[in-house]
Image 1 (cartoon, rainbow, N blue to C red):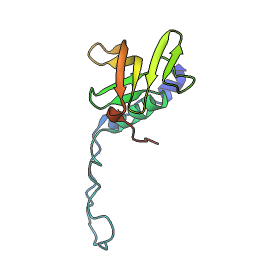
Image 2 (image 1 turned 90 degrees about the vertical axis):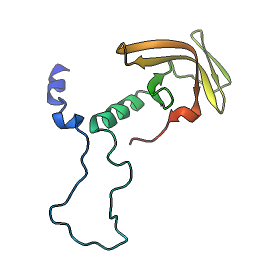
Image 3 (image 1 turned 90 degrees about the horizontal axis):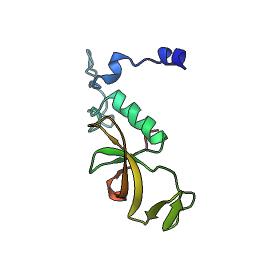
Image 4 (image 1 turned 60 degrees about the vertical axis):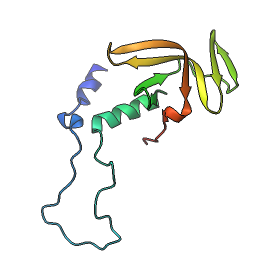
Length: 130
């Protein structure tokens, strides 16, 4: 494991902001081709993107109101209105989920448990990072 980690060390450029490409010798293109980069294409870093992709792969969810990552302690086996899983009750509706969640506390740099938390779907960041 350690040997594999050494072969996949982060590169200093992974934490740099992606810079907009400026050609040295611009050439004229037809109008139906993009003339400027898409909006918001330069926000965030490659490291943030890769971290978000890895967290989503492990079933973490980003809450856009609190700007924090949340995860259920266990995935429910069935999507019912009330789910009892090892004494954990999760309420699931069309608008929200309520129950015990684990979140990453960036101030204490660790995971913490929040019981009775309501995760409203309107605050769920659900972009596909594939």
